[in-house]
Image 1 (cartoon, rainbow, N blue to C red):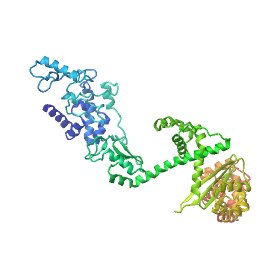
Image 2 (tube, rainbow, N blue to C red; image 1 turned 180 degrees about the horizontal axis):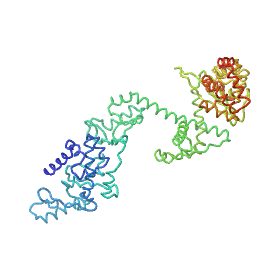
Image 3 (cartoon, rainbow, N blue to C red; image 1 turned 180 degrees about the vertical axis):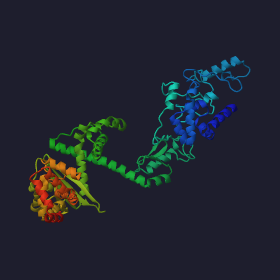
Image 4 (tube, rainbow, N blue to C red; image 1 turned 90 degrees about the vertical axis):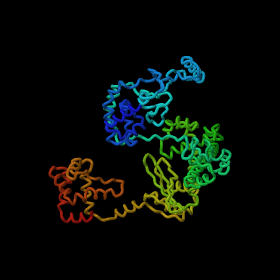
Length: 587
């Protein structure tokens, strides 16, 4: 054994790895054979254990150089060739040990075999023997029984020798080739630290599952549940467990009191209680929904609730609610339905039935939530509509909380067959505010909308009389647009007429020429967007006027006879100093 250590120390000193001897032996490397079977994961683990980069590089060279030479010396698998029965240091085999004195060697061996067979009938293999010396240290990775991924220890044991299970069907030469030319991983591909559970406890604990010596008795644990009944405590694995925080709690009275006084526990408690309260509210809405369906259908009940337990109804409704809040398409629920049912132990529905059965109760739940939130609040009303494929009319209520936080709530999104007049707008607003949201006339303080004639007439003719404390606030961009329309800019307007004619869609040559001179396509004024003409003047005219690009554009069009009627007029305009002075002032 001493000669072996001397030889191993000489190898390490020759390779410049003597300083890393302790780390290598703790990792399970004690011979040249083990060095030859090292893999990339082993090098990463050794680097994490403190092996220096230069030593690690030398170790890799040693592994690559000795891979093919040591492949033939690797031990065969224990499943193909049974290890021989080795003798101990005293020269006696394990089977020759006797239990009784005075018997012969052969009789005692047979007696020992018989007694061992009677004591343990499961160990029928003749391969169970003591493995010492070089054979034990040649074992590479112990995959079974070594949960933290370390290599087998070099210390001798009396148990069965662990063997390395082959990971692939590569030959020794192929394995050496693949390891030698294996591309190095990126620096971001770092080995992850294995998280293992300390089953023997922590600190002064000697019990499993982290239980302490000073823990109270089970009867005292039950008293803790009675002393704190509303804090979601339960007994799990002989310990006190908080379901709200998902963690163990000390069993002493002071530990429980400290835990329930923390901000984390208080927050988790409110969230859990809110979840329970939501379930109660959802069941009430389901009952209310049944009454509405029964009244509208002549006494019939809605489908999907008669024989379904209340717990299942709550889970299905909350599942649809969370899908809607997350903005996930309901049809995607079918893809995770099986996984959810296995782990939640609650049968769900497909996307069609889920919407058909639970969209009505959820609409009632949302409506009741808005009623509670908007009760006794002073509100302002936003409303607007669009005429894309019919009329979509939106109503948003705004109020200010006690801490001056502004809150907006969408209360109505109506899809109509066509545009509304002022009387229809007034009727829809009054029905939504008074009937649906149950807001009194004195609580409405303002109306906010665009300056369309129907909206202005709606307030002046009807809403101003019904809601006496409200005022009308038209859209500020509309007002600004009207102010801009009152500006007198005759020279600028004349040039804009020439410009708009030059860049119309039919004059593609002038557009191409403008892009060649300025580097950008000319801007167009929109017919509906406010202040689009000012955007054209700011982005296309003003910068090109100061650098002379507009004049070069007009000269080039006249030269190439593009727009023969308009181009000369623009050229004459840009060469007129009096008009150019006024043009620069107005723009």
